[in-house]
Every structure is written in structure tokens, then in C-alpha cells.
Length: 408
Image 1 (cartoon, rainbow, N blue to C red):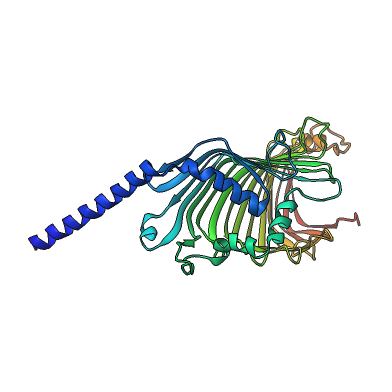
Image 2 (image 1 turned 90 degrees about the vertical axis):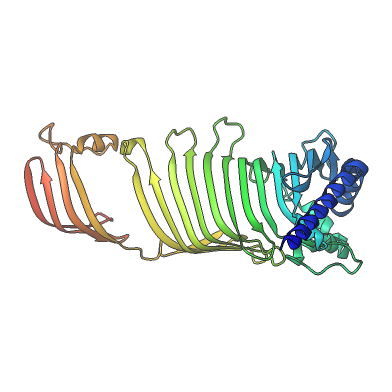
């Protein structure tokens, strides 16, 4: 036993010396700055982007083996050097899992982007600046497919025939910190800005669903001449994502979306929580479907006082994006409601005054003490309070109350 333990310790020591020697060799004889020209050439060759690496490239060995890049910018082929870059980031880090390297595989353990900035624009004719990249990749044919092969191959593809390392694109962790996306649509005269963008993904894979969390602030401006934006919303998104890059069919499962929104110069935040069993965006068919959707809203308006109005509904959605049409089922197709209505005693006079519907009364104290309880049911045409008990200014009334929304 003692001999086996000594052999084991010696083996571990030798492996440790090999690792240390490899680190010393790489840090001493290989300068990652030598990779810069090659990276710039590869990006220009296959995408047309003009990459500028102003910051240093450096190795990292603890806690993971990887490379970090600082201060990078990428411009479109037709952009001038003083134009706002199409994409940029403050720092990017790529770390590799060490054990797969021993098996001749490159397994990306983590990808982190700090300060990502992306500028998208659609001109007055409806053409997006990103379309240049897509056309460039499509024109490259087989060469472009070769560049994208790791992304389409999935995890642990077979080693290449030339004996090189195989690439396993199954990234254990993807993180984007404090990103920003600016989208300008000249055709619709609209600005959309996503800022404070934070994204976290685990076991990110192009062929398999993976969990994704994101939070950001979106600002919508339909009139740049007005300082106050049309909409400002804080959004939190959680889902299980299937990218479906090859088919152009993106699937979000177990979708949860929370939004706190301010409209125009209003100070009140309108809250909405959307959940769905599945949301599918098919870019080939230009179609969006949402199954088992549930929407919970909490609305606030000065005329309603300081109490929020809570609404809840379930629905299915089918949308035709080119036709800009959508069909909601279970929401507008003969919806019905049923429940219990209870109103604690209160004065209706302030409410009716704010809504400007206070009727003329013989007494200035009328409607100052109103309370009721009743089962309630109805649809878009009728409402029924069956089993009503009404307390009105000291009197009690019981019975049934029903009506139609058309006033009859």
C-alpha cells in the first residue's frame, strides 16, 4: 500500500511539473499579441468586418486557461474610421476546459463580454445594416460554412481529418455584462435602445435547449424631437432556449417575462408578467406562435387612486409578421368571467368625482357609504350579480342585478 501511494504521488508530481512547464513555455515563448494580425485577417476575410484591437491580448491561467481581449471595435465594410462602430466591447474573455485539451478537444468553458455595444440601423428603404454581413457569409459558400462548422456541429464533433483539434461548442457559461443595443429605424422613424443588458446562459449549445436569463432596460422613442421617450420599461426574462440556427426556428420554453413600464411622462409604473409554455419564432415562415400564455397586469392611474387594478387572462397567440396581423384565442373569442365581488364600505364620491361621473343627488353626503358583496359572472355583452347584498348610506338591499353593456 505504501508503495502504491508513493507511485501515485510521484505520478501527480510529474503531471504537475508538465503543466507548470507548459505554462512557462507558453508565457515565455508565445506572445498572444502575435495573434492580432491573424485575427483581423480572418474576421475581414469571412465577414467583411474591419476589426480593430486597440487593447492587449493576454493569457490567463487561473482559475482557468484562457485568453482575454480588451478594447475591440468592428466596423462594416462601408463605414468610415470615425463612424460609430457596428459592434464593440470593453473586454472579452474566453476560457477553455483543461481536461478536454488532453483528449485533443477544444471545449469552451466560459465566454464573458464586458461593455458590449451593438448598433443596428434600418434605412428609409427598409434595409438593415446587418444584412451586409449575412450576404457576405452567404456569398462565401462552403468557406463560410467551414468557419461556422463548430457552431453547427454541436458538442464533441469528430476530430478533423487533418489531425487538428476538434471543437466542442457546448459552452458551460456565457455572460454579458452592461451591454447596450441601439436600433434606429429610419423607415418607421423610431429609436429603440436596450441598455444595462445582462445575459447569463449555461451549457449554451446551438442544437440543444439551454437555460437563459436576461435583464435590461428598453427605451422606445417614436419622436426624436421630443425629449420624453414614448416608453421606458425594465424587463427580466427567463426561459429555456432552443436557438435553431440552421432552421431559423427559435423556441422559448417555460417563458417568464416581467416588465415594469412607464408611458410617456407618466410617473406611474404599469406592471405586467407574461408566462408561456412555449413561444416559437419561425423566421422562415415569418410566423410567431405562443402557447399556454398567461398575462397578469397591475395597472395604476391617478383617476383610480393609489390602489392598483389587477387583471389576469390566459390566451393563445398566432401572428403573421409580414401581414402584421395576429389572432388571439381565449381572449377575444367569447371570453367569460366568473367570481366573487366584494366591496368594503367606502365613499364613492371621490371616485366618481375623479372620473367626472358624479350624478346629481339630493344630499351632499349621498353615496358616502357604499359596500356590497355578490357572486358575479358575465361576458363581453352582459354582467350579472346574482345574490347581491348592497349596503347604501345605512340601508341594506338584497336581490339580483343584471345589465347589458350597450345600456339596454
